[in-house]
Length: 592
Image (cartoon, rainbow, N blue to C red; front, side, top):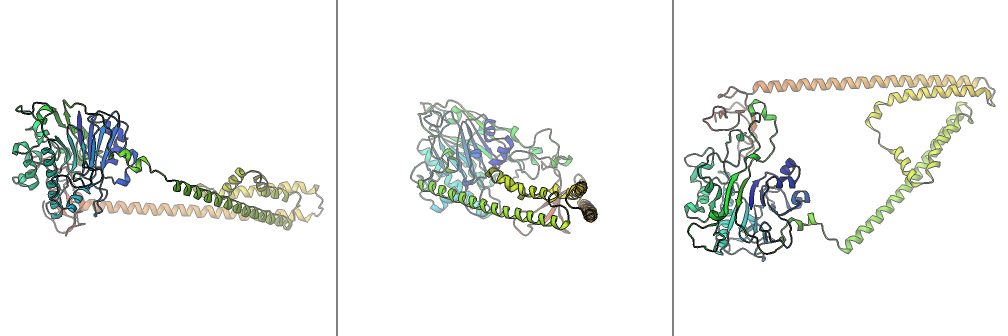
Protein backbone atom coordinates (compact mmCIF):
# COMPACT_ATOMS: atom_id res chain seq x y z
CA UNK A 1 0.00 0.00 0.00
CA UNK A 2 1.30 3.47 -0.98
CA UNK A 3 0.40 6.69 0.86
CA UNK A 4 1.34 10.15 -0.46
CA UNK A 5 1.05 13.49 1.31
CA UNK A 6 1.26 16.72 -0.72
CA UNK A 7 0.67 20.39 0.07
CA UNK A 8 -0.78 21.47 -3.29
CA UNK A 9 -0.91 25.22 -2.50
CA UNK A 10 -4.33 25.45 -4.17
CA UNK A 11 -6.09 22.42 -5.64
CA UNK A 12 -7.44 24.38 -8.62
CA UNK A 13 -3.90 25.34 -9.67
CA UNK A 14 -2.66 21.75 -9.52
CA UNK A 15 -5.65 20.44 -11.48
CA UNK A 16 -5.01 23.11 -14.11
CA UNK A 17 -1.33 22.13 -14.22
CA UNK A 18 -2.03 18.42 -14.75
CA UNK A 19 -5.13 18.81 -16.91
CA UNK A 20 -7.61 17.08 -14.58
CA UNK A 21 -7.99 15.82 -11.04
CA UNK A 22 -7.69 12.22 -12.22
CA UNK A 23 -4.37 12.90 -13.96
CA UNK A 24 -3.04 14.59 -10.82
CA UNK A 25 -3.96 11.64 -8.59
CA UNK A 26 -2.85 9.02 -11.10
CA UNK A 27 0.61 10.59 -11.35
CA UNK A 28 1.35 9.35 -7.81
CA UNK A 29 0.13 5.78 -8.44
CA UNK A 30 -0.80 5.68 -4.73
CA UNK A 31 -3.64 4.02 -2.85
CA UNK A 32 -4.21 7.02 -0.56
CA UNK A 33 -3.36 10.61 -1.52
CA UNK A 34 -3.61 13.25 1.22
CA UNK A 35 -3.68 16.87 0.03
CA UNK A 36 -3.28 20.00 2.13
CA UNK A 37 -3.97 23.69 1.50
CA UNK A 38 -6.69 23.01 -1.06
CA UNK A 39 -8.01 26.58 -0.58
CA UNK A 40 -11.60 25.55 -1.21
CA UNK A 41 -14.78 26.43 0.62
CA UNK A 42 -17.56 23.88 0.99
CA UNK A 43 -19.86 25.77 -1.42
CA UNK A 44 -17.11 25.78 -4.06
CA UNK A 45 -16.79 22.00 -4.25
CA UNK A 46 -17.83 20.73 -7.67
CA UNK A 47 -17.45 17.37 -9.40
CA UNK A 48 -14.32 18.41 -11.33
CA UNK A 49 -12.61 19.44 -8.07
CA UNK A 50 -13.77 16.62 -5.80
CA UNK A 51 -14.58 13.53 -7.89
CA UNK A 52 -12.26 11.34 -9.96
CA UNK A 53 -13.04 7.98 -11.49
CA UNK A 54 -11.79 5.19 -9.24
CA UNK A 55 -11.33 7.43 -6.14
CA UNK A 56 -13.39 8.25 -3.08
CA UNK A 57 -12.69 11.66 -1.54
CA UNK A 58 -13.22 13.24 1.88
CA UNK A 59 -12.88 17.00 2.42
CA UNK A 60 -12.50 19.40 5.29
CA UNK A 61 -13.02 23.05 4.34
CA UNK A 62 -12.64 26.34 6.14
CA UNK A 63 -15.71 27.28 8.17
CA UNK A 64 -14.35 30.38 9.90
CA UNK A 65 -15.36 33.88 8.83
CA UNK A 66 -12.29 35.56 10.31
CA UNK A 67 -10.65 38.12 8.05
CA UNK A 68 -8.01 36.53 5.81
CA UNK A 69 -9.09 32.98 6.71
CA UNK A 70 -11.98 32.39 4.30
CA UNK A 71 -11.07 30.09 1.43
CA UNK A 72 -7.84 29.32 3.26
CA UNK A 73 -6.28 26.02 4.38
CA UNK A 74 -8.45 22.95 3.63
CA UNK A 75 -7.44 19.29 3.35
CA UNK A 76 -8.69 16.37 1.26
CA UNK A 77 -8.05 12.61 1.36
CA UNK A 78 -8.44 10.61 -1.88
CA UNK A 79 -8.66 6.82 -1.67
CA UNK A 80 -8.19 4.66 -4.76
CA UNK A 81 -10.74 1.83 -4.73
CA UNK A 82 -12.34 -0.61 -7.13
CA UNK A 83 -15.74 -0.20 -5.53
CA UNK A 84 -17.19 2.30 -3.07
CA UNK A 85 -19.79 -0.18 -1.85
CA UNK A 86 -19.47 -3.59 -0.24
CA UNK A 87 -15.69 -3.47 -0.59
CA UNK A 88 -13.01 -5.24 1.44
CA UNK A 89 -10.19 -2.89 0.40
CA UNK A 90 -8.13 -1.27 3.17
CA UNK A 91 -7.81 1.96 1.17
CA UNK A 92 -11.58 2.52 1.49
CA UNK A 93 -12.19 3.79 5.04
CA UNK A 94 -14.87 2.30 7.23
CA UNK A 95 -15.41 5.72 8.83
CA UNK A 96 -14.37 9.32 8.14
CA UNK A 97 -14.49 12.52 10.16
CA UNK A 98 -14.00 16.22 9.40
CA UNK A 99 -11.80 17.66 12.12
CA UNK A 100 -10.53 15.71 15.12
CA UNK A 101 -12.50 17.01 18.11
CA UNK A 102 -15.79 15.21 17.41
CA UNK A 103 -17.94 18.35 17.45
CA UNK A 104 -18.41 18.72 13.69
CA UNK A 105 -20.83 16.70 11.57
CA UNK A 106 -19.92 13.12 10.62
CA UNK A 107 -17.74 12.64 13.70
CA UNK A 108 -16.44 9.13 14.40
CA UNK A 109 -18.32 8.95 17.71
CA UNK A 110 -21.57 9.66 15.85
CA UNK A 111 -22.83 11.87 18.69
CA UNK A 112 -21.52 15.31 17.79
CA UNK A 113 -19.82 15.42 21.19
CA UNK A 114 -16.18 15.92 22.11
CA UNK A 115 -14.08 12.77 21.86
CA UNK A 116 -12.91 10.93 24.94
CA UNK A 117 -9.97 12.69 26.55
CA UNK A 118 -11.00 16.18 25.32
CA UNK A 119 -13.52 16.91 28.09
CA UNK A 120 -11.17 19.36 29.82
CA UNK A 121 -11.05 21.72 26.84
CA UNK A 122 -13.57 24.52 26.31
CA UNK A 123 -16.05 23.89 23.51
CA UNK A 124 -15.14 27.18 21.85
CA UNK A 125 -11.48 26.13 21.69
CA UNK A 126 -12.41 22.76 20.20
CA UNK A 127 -14.60 24.33 17.53
CA UNK A 128 -11.99 26.95 16.72
CA UNK A 129 -9.30 24.39 15.84
CA UNK A 130 -11.71 22.42 13.65
CA UNK A 131 -13.30 25.40 11.89
CA UNK A 132 -10.20 26.21 9.85
CA UNK A 133 -10.45 22.98 7.85
CA UNK A 134 -7.12 21.51 8.91
CA UNK A 135 -7.84 17.82 9.42
CA UNK A 136 -9.60 14.80 7.93
CA UNK A 137 -9.53 11.56 9.93
CA UNK A 138 -10.18 8.25 8.15
CA UNK A 139 -10.44 4.89 9.90
CA UNK A 140 -9.04 2.08 7.74
CA UNK A 141 -9.57 -0.74 10.21
CA UNK A 142 -5.93 -1.63 10.80
CA UNK A 143 -4.96 2.01 11.41
CA UNK A 144 -6.43 5.51 11.79
CA UNK A 145 -5.07 8.06 9.30
CA UNK A 146 -4.77 11.78 10.18
CA UNK A 147 -4.42 14.14 7.20
CA UNK A 148 -3.19 17.40 8.76
CA UNK A 149 -2.36 20.94 7.74
CA UNK A 150 -0.70 22.48 10.80
CA UNK A 151 -1.11 26.18 11.61
CA UNK A 152 1.61 28.66 10.78
CA UNK A 153 2.57 31.30 13.36
CA UNK A 154 5.01 34.16 12.92
CA UNK A 155 7.31 34.82 15.85
CA UNK A 156 5.65 38.20 16.58
CA UNK A 157 2.02 37.02 16.24
CA UNK A 158 1.00 36.09 19.78
CA UNK A 159 -2.57 35.19 18.79
CA UNK A 160 -1.56 32.64 16.15
CA UNK A 161 1.17 31.24 18.40
CA UNK A 162 -1.44 30.55 21.06
CA UNK A 163 -3.76 29.00 18.46
CA UNK A 164 -0.97 26.71 17.24
CA UNK A 165 -0.17 25.61 20.79
CA UNK A 166 -3.83 24.84 21.47
CA UNK A 167 -4.16 23.00 18.15
CA UNK A 168 -1.32 20.56 18.87
CA UNK A 169 -2.23 20.18 22.54
CA UNK A 170 -5.76 19.02 21.67
CA UNK A 171 -4.42 16.85 18.85
CA UNK A 172 -1.95 15.11 21.14
CA UNK A 173 -4.75 14.30 23.61
CA UNK A 174 -6.74 12.72 20.80
CA UNK A 175 -3.76 10.59 19.77
CA UNK A 176 -3.15 9.44 23.33
CA UNK A 177 -6.80 8.41 23.64
CA UNK A 178 -6.65 6.29 20.47
CA UNK A 179 -3.36 4.63 21.50
CA UNK A 180 -4.89 3.71 24.85
CA UNK A 181 -7.65 1.95 22.88
CA UNK A 182 -4.98 -0.11 21.11
CA UNK A 183 -5.36 1.69 17.76
CA UNK A 184 -2.50 2.25 15.32
CA UNK A 185 -2.05 5.82 14.06
CA UNK A 186 -0.53 7.25 10.88
CA UNK A 187 -0.14 11.04 10.70
CA UNK A 188 0.65 12.70 7.38
CA UNK A 189 0.71 16.29 6.19
CA UNK A 190 2.29 19.71 6.39
CA UNK A 191 2.81 20.27 10.12
CA UNK A 192 4.67 23.57 9.62
CA UNK A 193 7.41 22.37 11.97
CA UNK A 194 11.01 21.46 11.12
CA UNK A 195 12.00 19.35 14.14
CA UNK A 196 15.82 19.52 14.05
CA UNK A 197 18.63 21.65 12.63
CA UNK A 198 19.17 18.93 10.03
CA UNK A 199 15.73 19.77 8.63
CA UNK A 200 16.37 23.48 8.05
CA UNK A 201 18.74 25.23 5.65
CA UNK A 202 19.62 28.19 7.89
CA UNK A 203 19.27 26.71 11.38
CA UNK A 204 21.03 28.82 13.99
CA UNK A 205 22.38 27.81 17.39
CA UNK A 206 19.01 28.40 19.10
CA UNK A 207 16.95 26.79 16.36
CA UNK A 208 15.97 23.65 18.30
CA UNK A 209 14.92 25.66 21.38
CA UNK A 210 11.69 26.72 19.71
CA UNK A 211 8.67 25.47 21.71
CA UNK A 212 7.02 23.81 18.72
CA UNK A 213 10.19 21.94 17.75
CA UNK A 214 10.61 20.79 21.34
CA UNK A 215 7.01 19.54 21.32
CA UNK A 216 7.54 17.69 18.01
CA UNK A 217 10.64 15.91 19.30
CA UNK A 218 8.86 15.05 22.56
CA UNK A 219 6.32 12.81 20.77
CA UNK A 220 9.05 10.85 18.92
CA UNK A 221 10.32 7.45 20.03
CA UNK A 222 13.85 8.82 20.51
CA UNK A 223 12.56 11.10 23.28
CA UNK A 224 10.21 8.55 24.86
CA UNK A 225 7.16 9.33 22.75
CA UNK A 226 5.00 6.90 20.74
CA UNK A 227 5.66 8.14 17.18
CA UNK A 228 8.31 7.40 14.58
CA UNK A 229 9.38 10.10 12.15
CA UNK A 230 9.25 7.69 9.21
CA UNK A 231 11.57 9.65 6.91
CA UNK A 232 14.27 10.20 9.55
CA UNK A 233 14.00 6.59 10.68
CA UNK A 234 14.75 5.46 7.12
CA UNK A 235 17.26 8.26 6.36
CA UNK A 236 18.78 9.37 9.69
CA UNK A 237 21.75 11.26 8.24
CA UNK A 238 20.47 12.61 4.92
CA UNK A 239 21.20 16.32 4.54
CA UNK A 240 19.37 18.92 2.48
CA UNK A 241 16.29 16.70 2.41
CA UNK A 242 13.77 19.51 2.21
CA UNK A 243 10.08 19.56 1.24
CA UNK A 244 9.27 23.29 1.16
CA UNK A 245 10.97 26.38 -0.30
CA UNK A 246 10.05 30.10 -0.14
CA UNK A 247 8.28 31.15 -3.34
CA UNK A 248 9.40 34.77 -3.54
CA UNK A 249 13.15 34.26 -3.14
CA UNK A 250 13.83 31.53 -5.71
CA UNK A 251 15.30 29.36 -2.95
CA UNK A 252 14.57 26.16 -4.90
CA UNK A 253 17.48 26.89 -7.23
CA UNK A 254 19.93 26.21 -4.40
CA UNK A 255 17.65 23.79 -2.49
CA UNK A 256 17.47 26.30 0.34
CA UNK A 257 14.40 25.13 2.22
CA UNK A 258 13.05 23.12 5.17
CA UNK A 259 11.44 19.75 5.89
CA UNK A 260 8.00 20.46 7.31
CA UNK A 261 5.96 17.78 5.47
CA UNK A 262 5.99 14.60 7.55
CA UNK A 263 4.76 11.03 7.89
CA UNK A 264 4.54 9.69 11.45
CA UNK A 265 3.34 6.32 12.69
CA UNK A 266 2.66 4.78 16.10
CA UNK A 267 1.34 1.49 17.46
CA UNK A 268 2.00 -2.19 17.38
CA UNK A 269 2.44 -4.38 14.34
CA UNK A 270 -0.29 -6.62 12.92
CA UNK A 271 1.43 -9.84 14.00
CA UNK A 272 -0.09 -12.00 16.71
CA UNK A 273 3.05 -12.11 18.84
CA UNK A 274 2.94 -8.56 20.15
CA UNK A 275 5.43 -9.23 22.91
CA UNK A 276 8.29 -10.00 20.54
CA UNK A 277 11.14 -7.54 20.99
CA UNK A 278 11.62 -5.09 18.13
CA UNK A 279 8.16 -5.58 16.73
CA UNK A 280 6.27 -2.39 15.88
CA UNK A 281 4.22 -0.95 13.05
CA UNK A 282 7.29 0.98 11.89
CA UNK A 283 9.65 -1.99 11.88
CA UNK A 284 7.25 -4.58 10.49
CA UNK A 285 5.09 -2.70 7.96
CA UNK A 286 6.89 0.43 6.72
CA UNK A 287 9.01 -0.49 3.71
CA UNK A 288 10.23 2.93 2.52
CA UNK A 289 9.74 6.68 2.74
CA UNK A 290 11.09 9.35 0.41
CA UNK A 291 10.60 12.87 -0.96
CA UNK A 292 9.28 13.06 -4.53
CA UNK A 293 11.64 15.77 -5.75
CA UNK A 294 10.46 15.37 -9.35
CA UNK A 295 7.42 17.48 -8.40
CA UNK A 296 9.54 20.51 -7.50
CA UNK A 297 8.82 23.68 -9.46
CA UNK A 298 12.45 24.46 -10.30
CA UNK A 299 14.32 21.66 -12.02
CA UNK A 300 17.97 21.30 -13.03
CA UNK A 301 18.48 22.88 -16.43
CA UNK A 302 16.04 25.75 -15.88
CA UNK A 303 17.35 29.23 -16.64
CA UNK A 304 18.62 30.96 -13.49
CA UNK A 305 16.61 33.91 -12.20
CA UNK A 306 19.35 36.51 -12.63
CA UNK A 307 20.14 35.24 -16.15
CA UNK A 308 16.73 35.82 -17.64
CA UNK A 309 14.78 33.12 -15.83
CA UNK A 310 12.76 35.51 -13.68
CA UNK A 311 10.14 35.87 -16.42
CA UNK A 312 9.73 32.08 -16.74
CA UNK A 313 6.65 30.87 -14.91
CA UNK A 314 7.36 27.91 -12.62
CA UNK A 315 4.41 25.53 -12.40
CA UNK A 316 3.77 23.55 -9.28
CA UNK A 317 3.48 23.91 -5.54
CA UNK A 318 6.15 25.32 -3.25
CA UNK A 319 6.11 21.92 -1.52
CA UNK A 320 7.25 18.47 -2.64
CA UNK A 321 5.18 15.33 -1.96
CA UNK A 322 6.33 12.66 0.51
CA UNK A 323 5.71 8.96 -0.12
CA UNK A 324 5.63 5.93 2.14
CA UNK A 325 5.04 2.29 1.21
CA UNK A 326 3.45 -0.19 3.63
CA UNK A 327 3.74 -3.98 3.57
CA UNK A 328 1.66 -6.78 5.03
CA UNK A 329 -1.63 -4.88 5.35
CA UNK A 330 -4.42 -7.49 4.88
CA UNK A 331 -7.95 -6.86 3.63
CA UNK A 332 -10.75 -6.05 6.04
CA UNK A 333 -14.46 -6.95 6.27
CA UNK A 334 -16.84 -5.73 3.59
CA UNK A 335 -17.92 -2.13 4.07
CA UNK A 336 -19.10 0.91 2.10
CA UNK A 337 -17.85 4.47 1.79
CA UNK A 338 -18.64 6.72 4.79
CA UNK A 339 -21.21 9.52 4.60
CA UNK A 340 -18.44 12.16 4.57
CA UNK A 341 -17.62 11.07 1.01
CA UNK A 342 -17.77 13.87 -1.56
CA UNK A 343 -20.28 11.82 -3.59
CA UNK A 344 -22.90 12.80 -0.98
CA UNK A 345 -22.21 16.56 -1.05
CA UNK A 346 -25.38 18.29 -2.34
CA UNK A 347 -23.45 20.49 -4.81
CA UNK A 348 -22.08 17.34 -6.43
CA UNK A 349 -24.92 14.85 -5.98
CA UNK A 350 -27.67 17.42 -6.62
CA UNK A 351 -30.51 18.61 -4.43
CA UNK A 352 -33.70 16.51 -4.22
CA UNK A 353 -36.65 18.52 -5.52
CA UNK A 354 -39.99 18.62 -3.72
CA UNK A 355 -43.32 18.43 -5.54
CA UNK A 356 -44.06 22.07 -4.66
CA UNK A 357 -40.76 23.27 -6.19
CA UNK A 358 -41.47 21.36 -9.41
CA UNK A 359 -44.97 22.90 -9.70
CA UNK A 360 -43.61 26.37 -8.98
CA UNK A 361 -40.97 26.02 -11.69
CA UNK A 362 -43.63 24.87 -14.17
CA UNK A 363 -45.84 27.86 -13.30
CA UNK A 364 -42.97 30.31 -13.75
CA UNK A 365 -42.07 28.75 -17.10
CA UNK A 366 -45.66 29.07 -18.35
CA UNK A 367 -45.84 32.71 -17.27
CA UNK A 368 -42.58 33.60 -18.95
CA UNK A 369 -43.76 31.85 -22.13
CA UNK A 370 -46.99 33.86 -22.18
CA UNK A 371 -45.03 37.08 -21.65
CA UNK A 372 -42.77 36.22 -24.59
CA UNK A 373 -45.78 35.54 -26.85
CA UNK A 374 -47.47 38.82 -25.93
CA UNK A 375 -44.20 40.67 -26.40
CA UNK A 376 -43.66 39.15 -29.85
CA UNK A 377 -47.20 40.12 -30.94
CA UNK A 378 -46.74 43.71 -29.82
CA UNK A 379 -43.33 43.87 -31.52
CA UNK A 380 -44.91 42.57 -34.74
CA UNK A 381 -47.65 45.22 -34.64
CA UNK A 382 -45.08 47.98 -34.11
CA UNK A 383 -42.98 46.63 -36.96
CA UNK A 384 -45.96 46.55 -39.38
CA UNK A 385 -46.91 50.10 -38.45
CA UNK A 386 -43.33 51.27 -39.03
CA UNK A 387 -43.30 49.51 -42.41
CA UNK A 388 -46.53 51.18 -43.46
CA UNK A 389 -45.16 54.54 -42.42
CA UNK A 390 -42.02 54.01 -44.51
CA UNK A 391 -44.16 52.99 -47.51
CA UNK A 392 -46.26 56.12 -47.11
CA UNK A 393 -43.20 58.38 -47.00
CA UNK A 394 -41.74 56.66 -50.07
CA UNK A 395 -44.99 57.20 -52.01
CA UNK A 396 -45.07 60.88 -51.05
CA UNK A 397 -41.45 61.36 -52.19
CA UNK A 398 -42.24 59.84 -55.56
CA UNK A 399 -45.30 62.09 -56.07
CA UNK A 400 -43.34 65.26 -55.28
CA UNK A 401 -40.33 64.38 -57.48
CA UNK A 402 -42.30 64.43 -60.72
CA UNK A 403 -41.30 60.91 -61.72
CA UNK A 404 -43.95 58.46 -62.86
CA UNK A 405 -45.55 56.66 -59.91
CA UNK A 406 -46.13 53.66 -62.08
CA UNK A 407 -42.54 53.09 -63.07
CA UNK A 408 -40.44 54.55 -60.24
CA UNK A 409 -42.40 54.06 -57.02
CA UNK A 410 -44.02 50.63 -57.26
CA UNK A 411 -40.68 48.87 -56.96
CA UNK A 412 -39.92 50.76 -53.75
CA UNK A 413 -43.36 50.08 -52.41
CA UNK A 414 -43.02 46.44 -53.29
CA UNK A 415 -39.65 46.13 -51.58
CA UNK A 416 -40.97 47.91 -48.48
CA UNK A 417 -44.08 45.80 -48.27
CA UNK A 418 -42.63 42.45 -49.33
CA UNK A 419 -41.05 41.89 -45.92
CA UNK A 420 -44.43 42.08 -44.22
CA UNK A 421 -46.30 40.11 -46.84
CA UNK A 422 -43.72 37.31 -46.69
CA UNK A 423 -43.38 37.32 -42.94
CA UNK A 424 -47.06 36.86 -42.29
CA UNK A 425 -47.43 33.12 -43.04
CA UNK A 426 -44.90 31.63 -40.56
CA UNK A 427 -43.47 32.46 -37.12
CA UNK A 428 -39.96 31.38 -38.16
CA UNK A 429 -39.70 34.05 -40.84
CA UNK A 430 -41.10 36.61 -38.40
CA UNK A 431 -38.24 36.00 -35.97
CA UNK A 432 -35.69 36.07 -38.76
CA UNK A 433 -37.05 39.35 -40.10
CA UNK A 434 -37.07 40.94 -36.66
CA UNK A 435 -33.54 39.77 -35.97
CA UNK A 436 -32.24 41.20 -39.24
CA UNK A 437 -34.01 44.50 -38.60
CA UNK A 438 -32.89 45.07 -35.03
CA UNK A 439 -29.57 43.14 -35.00
CA UNK A 440 -26.55 44.93 -33.52
CA UNK A 441 -24.13 46.52 -35.99
CA UNK A 442 -20.58 45.24 -36.06
CA UNK A 443 -17.52 47.45 -35.67
CA UNK A 444 -16.55 46.82 -39.30
CA UNK A 445 -19.88 48.22 -40.53
CA UNK A 446 -18.98 51.67 -39.23
CA UNK A 447 -15.80 51.74 -41.31
CA UNK A 448 -17.72 50.64 -44.41
CA UNK A 449 -20.10 53.56 -44.12
CA UNK A 450 -18.41 55.76 -46.70
CA UNK A 451 -18.22 53.00 -49.28
CA UNK A 452 -21.92 52.32 -48.79
CA UNK A 453 -22.68 55.95 -49.45
CA UNK A 454 -20.77 55.86 -52.74
CA UNK A 455 -22.58 52.69 -53.76
CA UNK A 456 -25.92 54.31 -53.04
CA UNK A 457 -24.93 57.29 -55.14
CA UNK A 458 -23.97 55.07 -58.07
CA UNK A 459 -27.20 53.15 -57.73
CA UNK A 460 -29.15 56.38 -57.83
CA UNK A 461 -27.41 57.31 -61.09
CA UNK A 462 -28.33 53.97 -62.59
CA UNK A 463 -31.94 54.43 -61.51
CA UNK A 464 -32.00 57.87 -63.07
CA UNK A 465 -30.64 56.67 -66.40
CA UNK A 466 -33.18 53.85 -66.47
CA UNK A 467 -36.03 56.22 -65.78
CA UNK A 468 -34.84 58.51 -68.61
CA UNK A 469 -34.97 55.67 -71.13
CA UNK A 470 -38.45 54.79 -70.02
CA UNK A 471 -39.88 58.31 -70.07
CA UNK A 472 -40.57 58.61 -73.85
CA UNK A 473 -42.78 55.55 -73.62
CA UNK A 474 -44.82 56.87 -70.74
CA UNK A 475 -48.12 58.74 -70.87
CA UNK A 476 -46.51 62.07 -69.82
CA UNK A 477 -45.36 64.40 -72.67
CA UNK A 478 -43.87 67.26 -70.69
CA UNK A 479 -40.24 67.74 -71.73
CA UNK A 480 -39.32 69.65 -68.53
CA UNK A 481 -39.92 66.87 -66.07
CA UNK A 482 -36.92 64.64 -66.94
CA UNK A 483 -34.56 67.64 -66.99
CA UNK A 484 -35.59 68.74 -63.52
CA UNK A 485 -35.20 65.18 -62.22
CA UNK A 486 -31.65 64.80 -63.59
CA UNK A 487 -30.52 68.12 -62.19
CA UNK A 488 -31.91 67.34 -58.71
CA UNK A 489 -30.32 63.89 -58.81
CA UNK A 490 -26.97 65.40 -59.83
CA UNK A 491 -27.09 67.82 -56.94
CA UNK A 492 -27.97 64.96 -54.59
CA UNK A 493 -25.03 62.97 -55.95
CA UNK A 494 -22.67 65.91 -55.40
CA UNK A 495 -23.90 66.24 -51.85
CA UNK A 496 -23.39 62.53 -51.24
CA UNK A 497 -19.87 62.60 -52.69
CA UNK A 498 -19.04 65.68 -50.68
CA UNK A 499 -20.41 64.11 -47.51
CA UNK A 500 -18.49 60.86 -48.15
CA UNK A 501 -15.20 62.66 -48.77
CA UNK A 502 -15.69 64.78 -45.65
CA UNK A 503 -16.38 61.68 -43.58
CA UNK A 504 -13.33 59.91 -45.00
CA UNK A 505 -11.18 62.90 -44.12
CA UNK A 506 -12.58 62.99 -40.56
CA UNK A 507 -11.87 59.29 -40.14
CA UNK A 508 -8.31 59.71 -41.38
CA UNK A 509 -7.75 62.66 -39.05
CA UNK A 510 -9.21 60.68 -36.13
CA UNK A 511 -7.01 57.65 -36.86
CA UNK A 512 -3.89 59.77 -37.18
CA UNK A 513 -4.72 61.58 -33.93
CA UNK A 514 -5.20 58.28 -32.06
CA UNK A 515 -1.95 56.96 -33.50
CA UNK A 516 -0.14 60.09 -32.43
CA UNK A 517 -1.51 59.80 -28.89
CA UNK A 518 -0.44 56.15 -28.72
CA UNK A 519 3.07 57.02 -29.85
CA UNK A 520 3.33 59.81 -27.28
CA UNK A 521 2.13 57.49 -24.48
CA UNK A 522 4.60 54.80 -25.56
CA UNK A 523 7.51 57.25 -25.59
CA UNK A 524 6.51 58.56 -22.16
CA UNK A 525 6.29 55.03 -20.74
CA UNK A 526 9.74 54.22 -22.13
CA UNK A 527 11.10 57.37 -20.57
CA UNK A 528 9.60 56.43 -17.18
CA UNK A 529 11.05 52.92 -17.46
CA UNK A 530 14.46 54.35 -18.27
CA UNK A 531 14.30 56.67 -15.24
CA UNK A 532 13.27 53.76 -13.03
CA UNK A 533 16.04 51.60 -14.44
CA UNK A 534 18.63 54.30 -13.78
CA UNK A 535 17.40 54.66 -10.17
CA UNK A 536 17.73 50.92 -9.37
CA UNK A 537 20.84 50.36 -7.23
CA UNK A 538 23.45 47.66 -7.79
CA UNK A 539 23.96 44.99 -5.15
CA UNK A 540 27.33 45.03 -3.35
CA UNK A 541 28.08 41.34 -3.79
CA UNK A 542 27.63 41.00 -7.57
CA UNK A 543 27.30 44.60 -8.85
CA UNK A 544 24.05 43.61 -10.55
CA UNK A 545 20.74 45.53 -10.68
CA UNK A 546 18.54 44.78 -7.67
CA UNK A 547 14.84 43.91 -7.70
CA UNK A 548 12.20 46.13 -6.09
CA UNK A 549 9.77 44.75 -3.55
CA UNK A 550 7.07 46.10 -1.25
CA UNK A 551 6.51 45.41 2.44
CA UNK A 552 3.19 43.54 2.71
CA UNK A 553 3.27 42.78 6.42
CA UNK A 554 1.19 45.06 8.62
CA UNK A 555 3.34 47.44 10.64
CA UNK A 556 5.12 50.80 10.48
CA UNK A 557 6.83 49.92 7.18
CA UNK A 558 3.73 48.54 5.44
CA UNK A 559 3.67 49.58 1.77
CA UNK A 560 7.28 50.79 1.65
CA UNK A 561 9.41 49.83 -1.34
CA UNK A 562 12.89 48.38 -0.99
CA UNK A 563 15.59 46.81 -3.13
CA UNK A 564 17.33 43.46 -2.63
CA UNK A 565 19.80 41.34 -4.53
CA UNK A 566 18.13 39.76 -7.56
CA UNK A 567 19.76 36.37 -7.15
CA UNK A 568 18.07 33.37 -5.58
CA UNK A 569 18.35 32.80 -1.86
CA UNK A 570 20.95 30.25 -0.85
CA UNK A 571 23.63 29.41 1.71
CA UNK A 572 26.00 32.24 2.62
CA UNK A 573 28.95 30.05 1.65
CA UNK A 574 27.76 29.98 -1.98
CA UNK A 575 29.02 33.05 -3.87
CA UNK A 576 26.46 32.42 -6.62
CA UNK A 577 23.55 32.88 -4.20
CA UNK A 578 21.89 36.05 -2.91
CA UNK A 579 24.45 38.38 -1.32
CA UNK A 580 21.97 39.78 1.21
CA UNK A 581 22.01 43.37 -0.07
CA UNK A 582 19.10 45.55 1.16
CA UNK A 583 18.19 49.18 0.59
CA UNK A 584 15.03 51.19 1.12
CA UNK A 585 13.69 52.93 -1.98
CA UNK A 586 13.68 56.31 -0.16
CA UNK A 587 16.61 58.17 1.37
CA UNK A 588 16.83 55.84 4.34
CA UNK A 589 19.02 52.83 3.65
CA UNK A 590 20.56 50.02 5.60
CA UNK A 591 22.28 46.72 5.02
CA UNK A 592 20.38 43.54 5.67
